[in-house]
Image (tube, rainbow, N blue to C red; front, side, top):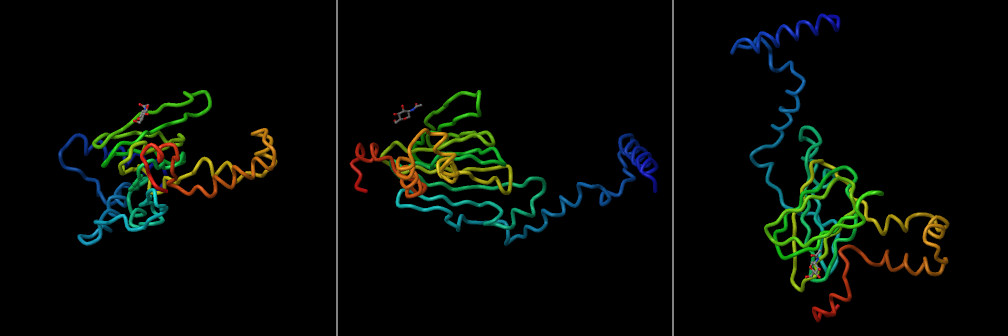
Length: 222
Ligand SMILES: *[C@@H]1O[C@H](CO)[C@@H](O)[C@H](O)[C@H]1NC(C)=O
């Protein structure tokens, strides 16, 4: 069948379905049906999950991702799919500045209070920040560098959802220090010795990491 002929047949079929309650289209022939069928891969036993895999963990908190690499069921969802993180941020700890290259994030705070901060793209606002407390939701646009810091002396927690099965994460500080020394030298104007010192402290500062000034205020032993 030529494309033109198929197209006019489709138009005819569509106008019939628009004009009457009865449709002559075989729904199984439509392109979107295979995506609907994919949903049936979820069974009665196979759609309830826990955040089992701890992706990053320190004494100051942990990060449990449910991206497609951790939960392959997400690969069966239609469209771009979805993903979710559970993030626990201890007193004075920070979920370090990072961005998600492939998805916007919608985070709901389930415990405590967190300072959410954003640094927009070149030409955008240099910094926007605000404290979000239990019961509130924060929206982080795709690709924007952001962090969640607990400046309080009690544990905080939030659940981050993404409209993508594989939103990806790029941690800002460790990404920068992966670049060649010459590039870091030229960018910062620092000596190799100074750069080595910062690199060492950044790579040793695993995520979530601690704000020592806050820890002192909260009389925390660390
Ligand atoms: C957020 O809370 C902290 C700690 O209570 C406070 O120091 C800071 O000024 C607040 N930030 C904003 C943007 O409101």
